[in-house]
Image 1 (cartoon, rainbow, N blue to C red):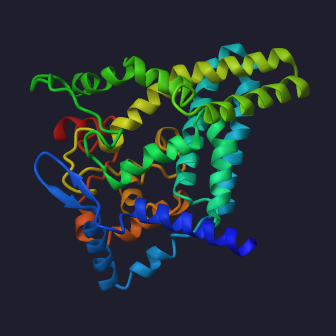
Image 2: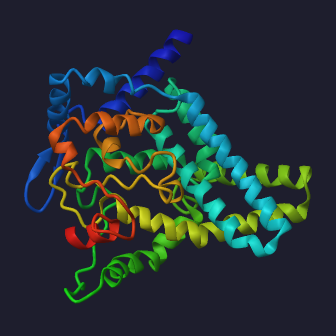
Length: 345
């Protein structure tokens, strides 16, 4: 029975790897031409092999369980601290919202890594943690998350299949400042009712009744434990700040991240359609847990998040990757996100 379970677990991991890695010739469609993700990845592999560097990259495609679980624990402790801080000192609510937002972004990234089976060696353990703990914590039904996320890799940029496509504003004028141009792209996302509801309630309105029951059951148990260990008043306060953060700062930051990854770019290749974001102090808030190395992730999604920076460094040996969009800052300078959004729209 144990061997059968191991075989099923291995088969599931292999199936997900095949889908997400683009090992087969998966096609992306754009208005100009059709490209093969598999061919692009293979070309990069060959370039690395020619420099005897691919094995080094391949060695990074192993879970870093202790680091990933440490990051998860850090985020949970940060949530507890933010709740205590704002409960004791109401005037520090803005700081508490930022701490909660950073933790929400970080935990969302861990759910994402679980969807690639990158935190544990066992596919079943990854799926269990995503289905019963981290997914419900983030208001996600893990099965829905998996099904929605697969096309973002296998059919990146394909209209009607990749749900993360963002249509940039066409009303930007040459006389508009960079800030005005950015706001014309960002504000429609920020004020979109459907996107806001998704940020606040996650998958509560989307999944099957089983998925919704898992989310509600997890939160009923969590809130009951908080009330029993601390007090009913603290339970209510925690619930209020959790929803408040999701409805305000988390939503605002999530929409910025949605823009940052692929918006306003041409889906002519993975490299041309993906941005590597800055590696600075703001990255800790906006792209926590190495989420800024997004191009490396799309090319080799089996590299777990703790190893993405190392993978990026290795990939810089490949000329076409080195020439990809790699930003230095978010809001200022010639090589910033707001400049990139305007330039490539």
